Image 1 (cartoon, rainbow, N blue to C red):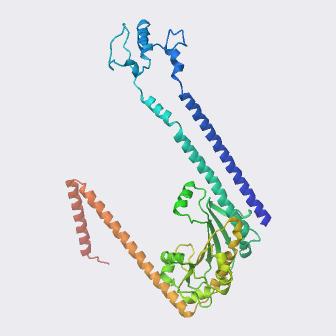
Image 2 (cartoon, rainbow, N blue to C red):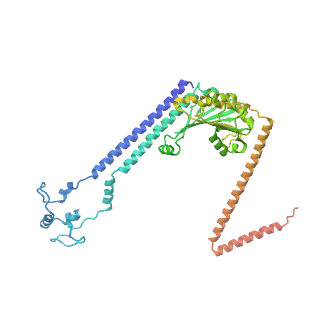
Image 3 (cartoon, rainbow, N blue to C red):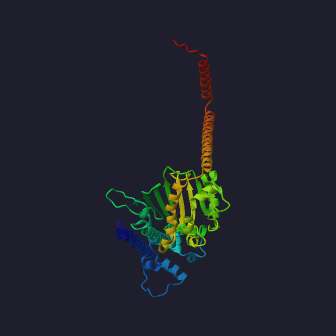
Length: 470
């Protein structure tokens, strides 16, 4: 794949995804607008005025502009001009109009049925609550949902832009990885051009490469910040304000590799690796200083955890110090913001391959992606150095003895865990049997004891029987 074709392929994929996302945003906006209009129309329907229904309940009023009569006049008018029983029972009366009257008055006025006040129903009370709150909860929920989807689109686009910048700089033809490996990317079909990056999630991308001497392949995992998740963005701003985009490069080595275990990292990270990684904890120890050959040029902020000083002297070459770790030529000043750790081992506990080289870098901004070039060159340089490394016979014998002893300890630990699991299973089975016996009736319990006794007798009798062979 040529650089122009790869760039066109990446641009086409970006434009397609951007179009799909824009269409999704437009659909969501239309749905939100229609929901808002429906809520507004329903709110207008709910805000009715009681004066609109006066004509439906009051008969015989020929003068609409005259003010209403006093309270006593209204009562006299009700006596003179009686209404039907159905109209009277459907009226909603005000409490102030019946001052002085008992609430349970059932007296008949002028031969008419008594007027009773209508009690407010549960539906009316809920409508009053709705009138007070309006549609504020629904509006807040809609705004939060819209903000989440907008943040998802913008965050996914930012992560994709960072991954695209990395691919254009190092993964296409003419970049670093195609110059070091014969096959880069992933092809789903034999006739299809391989994709440069494999998108695992909106915040994780993977890059595969193979076809180089001394190693089976390379896996680079680009883990960006979860910019697409609004909840994680808010949480990380408080819990992990220093969270950065990381690039994790794993190189799986071939069979011929000396027994070695070593890590280089800033002091705090080196202590964490030494405490958590099983191989470093079992085989390696912190060195007091860098090898004498490069001690004056090696950064004091870095700590070396190695099986032996001879191994560190074999791996940390002059070329590595000059390109990455050099303090006098300014190489470390350029690499220190992005270097996080380097781990070389033939017994990796967390990888699918035991012989593994693992490098962790912090990602720069998309416009500064070129600054990763010296660190990626360090990866392939360490592949060549590790494959050609030759330890002294004494150090090699000690390393092999440590691994044999660790295998024996691992075997004992597994056997102990297996025995503990069996004992726990037997205890659980016995507890279940006891609980079952307690729930039995006395007759069933007696039958069970009799069956156990017969079983023990049969077992004892079989031990005492002699088998005669002819």
